[in-house]
Length: 256
Image (cartoon, rainbow, N blue to C red; front, top):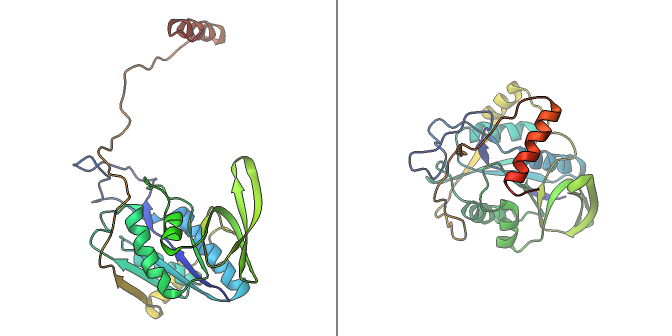
């Protein structure tokens, strides 16, 4: 029976209006609403599907963030067996993926996982996805853009997506790290009453991360909204007039 670890994190809700902080090097997190990363949510679903089909246990590990406890209890309501919250003062302010992956790897290896699942990417990634970094730190193989997983004879048979709608069936020896693009089924809905029940009966294992090593990550010098260059020109008229104007512009810039 596979022992599965799902690595998840909270990311900015892109429905909300995002603002740059005073230093100009990141997002203003004072009023930032965060939610579970969409691809990590699929990773949790895939982990639970494997558990339901093949048995085993699912451990969900997430760094400290606003609302992370509710998210972890929700994974328990879906079928996760163990929830772990990594605590450190820097998590709330945001850390690069190298520091996060090292913290994930250090904790995940305690559970001797056969399979580690995480989202293939996140909307706040700037210096590479977490999955390959965790695989490197643990000395495990990595496959990304996965949309289905089956366990057979100590190996994972996975469906890998490629651009253009192409897919391939691959086999990887366990233990391994997989970057999930989509679970075999959409993330399941759980009633809030079941989540509240888990808040009463389940426990979150809080682990204090001693040190975060950001080595290898990029340094953000400036973050800013797209700037108006003042060069936009709206072309009006019927199709022939617009086409003639475009030809004129292309000639002016030397494109024709």
